[in-house]
Every structure is written in structure tokens, then in C-alpha cells.
View 1 (cartoon, helix red, strand yellow):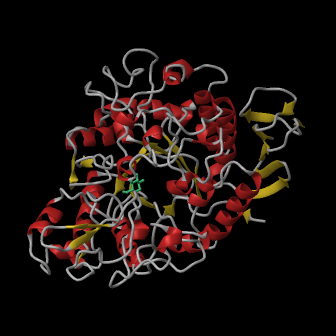
View 2 (tube, helix red, strand yellow; view 1 turned 30 degrees about the horizontal axis):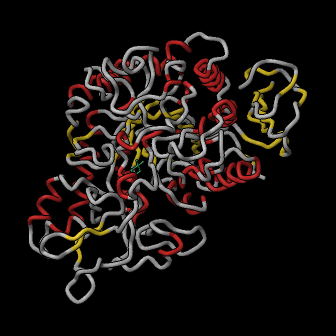
View 3 (spheres, protein in one colour; view 1 turned 90 degrees about the vertical axis):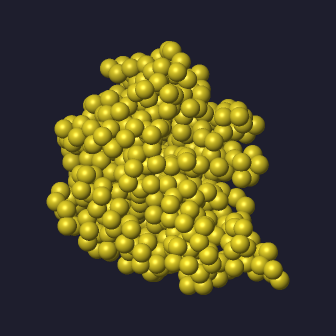
Amino acid sequence: MAVHEPTKGSQWWRSGVIYQIYPRSFLDSNGDGMGDLAGITKGLPALKELGVDAVWLSPFYRSPQKDAGYDVSDYVAVDPLFGDLNDFDEMLAKAHELGLRVMIDLVPNHSSDQHEWFQKAFASPKGSPERDFYHFKDGKGENGELPPNNWVSMFGGPAWTQVPDGQWYCHLFDSSQPDLNWSNPKVKKAFEEILRFWLDRGVDGFRVDQPHAMAKKEGLPDHPYVTEAGAGFIEGREAPPMWFQDEVHEIFRDWKSILDEYPGDRAMCGEAYVLPLSLMAKWVRPDEFHQTFNFRFLDAGWQKDTLVAAIDESFEAFDAVGAPSTWVLSNHDVIRHASRFGGEYGRATASDGIGPSDPQPDSELGLIKARAATLFMLGLPGASYLYQGEELGLPEHTTLEPKHRQDPTFARTKGERVGRDGCRVPLPWVAGGEANGFSSVSGWLPQPVIYAELARESQVGKEGSTLELYKSALRLRKKLSLGEGSFDWVLTGDVLSYKNGNITAVHNFGQEPWPLEGNAIIRSGDGSETLFPNETAWLV
Ligand code: NOJ
């Protein structure tokens, strides 16, 4: 069983709590129903009060928004939907004034098909240097009428689209998101300039999208077990030609050395879906990423055995290379944990949202478990990621009608997979009005009725509210330096507990109340002599 010694190294990213802002759904300042950068500036003081150390902004770059901004058409411009570079600078200055760091999302695996690189590639002949920015290939079959290989898109359907001269281009996601060719030195150079552009502006780091897809195996051979794995891979089997190829590490070593030229602990977090974590640890060796997301933990669900195994594996793998583990329960791609834990929805990263015709979550149980899970997570040493709205206990919107669905997964699978819109609904700030204070008009996605009750303003100062629970947990975490702390299991039965410094975090996975042994300095449920099933407490 894992034991973790206190963190060596004082950089903020080793222990910080990073709050993910999904710009289109955070706060709308100009009444167009879409969140924006000026809205973020306005909302930052609330995040300071919450007690986080940093924010990570999902993409706000110029984009046709075919995949909510993960389809970038200009990496050094702000999309007019969100404002302009001045708004960005103001937001950054405000964050820094408040002592909050800002990480931005970089999307290097693919651009938008509206990016000028792709527009030029499209208009240029076969074999031209312009085409070499992307993966253009001739098709198979007598007349090249079949895709060059058997790859499928993560969003459903083939990973290839044919252009008028007969060639095909590769897209692991939507056809509007062509994959860039990272074996082309010009692509590398272009991104180094993009990194510097934002570092010069003062960002504190990057969350890097899909880094494990950037290097593709030479010649783009078939996926060897596509029928079993679809677009993905199977743990323990050989890496398919589009996932975690060794060549990718060199790119991030270069990026790390660029970040190191800048003062102030700039950091990179990779959204690398690489398993087991012993493989993922290669990504956070001292000269590569500072940290990666921990999908093992995210996928563990709220079940004792998988949770214990995920925590053990995390400390073993990351400690071996001197990197912090990260912890996360929700993000913009998975069912919010207040709903996920209220039903049987499988692995977070393999689930596809909840639709009106799916079994609906038990929202009361979901929230009880979600609060407990978060408290259990925030006691762990390492860095933690929070997703906007979880501090309000927001559930997924599970009854969105098809007409509102915008995730490309919905259209590409003809509605079979409802997609991720349910976790991306605008935040409620103040109950009432068109969008509970998010905007003066209705938001780009409608909110479920319960969001009025959960509005931030109604939870401020309210005893027992989820917001106050998060605030207290973050305050104590900081005061007791838990992020930099140690880890040792205490009990691994139905009552599960670990020690971090002077506190013992305990969760009751059992069916019976458990008599508390110690003073609870914080708990996820309401106070009594016992720890109820599905409750977490920190004891001293
Ligand atoms: C991961 C992002 O988190 C997700 O939202 C996006 O659709 C894909 N990468 C493609 O960029």
C-alpha cells in the first residue's frame, strides 16, 4: 500500500488547487447569452473567496466553435464571442492582483479547418509543403475511394475526410478539426512562437489538450485492434499508432525549456490519457510536463476498491519520478460528479452524458456522495482540479432537448450518444431572471430548474451549503499545508481513512454509522456523534 512523504519542492503547482473556468458558461458581461472574458474578470473575486490558487481557462481563441473552441482558427487571437486581447490582459491583471495564477488551454493536436494553415493546405496541390502541415494521404481502393487506414474518430464515424482532389485528411475528432503533422519542423516552430506569445503576455502556464495524440506512428498504419478498442486503446496492449508514441516526449522537453526561460514557476499540465500510470509517469519526468491529469482517479468512481487502487497507483507512479499527483472529479467532458455518483454511469471518461431517456440519477444521494468525495480528495497531497460549478453542488442537466445539443458527438452519432452538453450549462449566480444571474438574456444552453436553488449568492454564508463546505475545506487545506503533506492509509475496510500530517480523513463506505474517533474539524454531512454512510470527515 502506498506511502507518500511530504512534497519536496515548493513550486505552487505541486500542491495548488486549480479551478477550471469554462468561459462560455462562467459569466456573461455583455448580454449575448455567452460567457466572456470580461465576465471572468468580474467573477474572479468570488474564486478568490472560494480559496483556489489558480484558474485554468478552456479555449477562448478565435474559433468557429464546432467543438466549443477546441477547434482553433487563430491561436493568438481571442474569439469575438469572448472579447479581445485587451479583455484578456485585463482578466490576467485582475487575477494576478488577486494572487491567482492563470493557465490557458493549448490545443496543438489539431486546428480548426478554418485555420489559415488548413485553408492553404486545402487549396494547395498534393505533396506541397502546405499539405505537410497536416496528415493528407491518398486513399485505398482502385481509385483511392477508401480511407487510407481504419482509424475512427473519438466523436464517432471515420477519422478521415476526402477533399475534392481525392486525398484524405486525418481528424481524430470532428472533421472540422484536422490533425496537425508534428513530424513537420514548421509545425513545431509555429507552436513555439504561440507558447512565447502567451508567456510574454504573462500566463502562468498551459493545460495541453490531447498531447498523447500529437506524434503518430510513421506511415500511419492501421489500428491493430480497432474492432475492440474503437478510437481508443486497451490498457496493457500495444499502443495504437495514434496514441502515446515515444516521439512525443521530445516536443514537451522543448516546451519545458521554453517555460524555464521565463521567471515565476510557469507550469504545463498534460491532458494525457495514458494508462497504466507507470506509463503516464514518463510524461512528468523532471524535464517534461509538470503534471498530468489523473484519469485513473477520475475513472475510479466512488467505490472503495477502485479508489484505493487508484490512489496507491498514483503515489507509486508519480513519486517514482518526483512529480505531484493530481486529483480531479469533474471537468467539461464528463458527467458532473454530483450526478455521476447518483447512479450507475460507468467510467467517467467513457460515459457520454445523460439524456432524457436514460435512467435519471438520484440527485440527493449524488450530492451527498459528491460532497464527501470532494472532501476526501482535498485532503490528499498533490494538486487538485475543480470544475466550475461543482462548488455549488451543481448536477448535470439530464433532460436537455435535442434542439439544444451542440456537442459534435450528438450529431456524429445521430443522437445515439447525447454528448457532453449537460455538464457545460451556464452557472447560476443569483436566483431568478432569464438565466439566474449568468446573463441578462437566456444562456446559450438552458439551465435545469434546480439551478435557481443552487445559485452562488443563495449559498454564500449559508450554513451547510456546498459552497461553504468547499470554502472551509480549501481554507483548512491551506492552513494545514495538506497539499504539500504526506499520505499513509489508516483503515482500508468499509470505513476508509488516511493520514496527512495531523489530520485523518475518513469516509464511510459502509451501511452503518461509525462512531467518530477524534474531533471532526470539517465534515461533508451534518454534525452528530457518528459518521453516516457516504460521509467524509477530517479528524484531529
Ligand atoms: C479534450 C477536450 O477536453 C475536449 O473537450 C475536446 O473535445 C477534445 N480534447 C478535442 O480537442
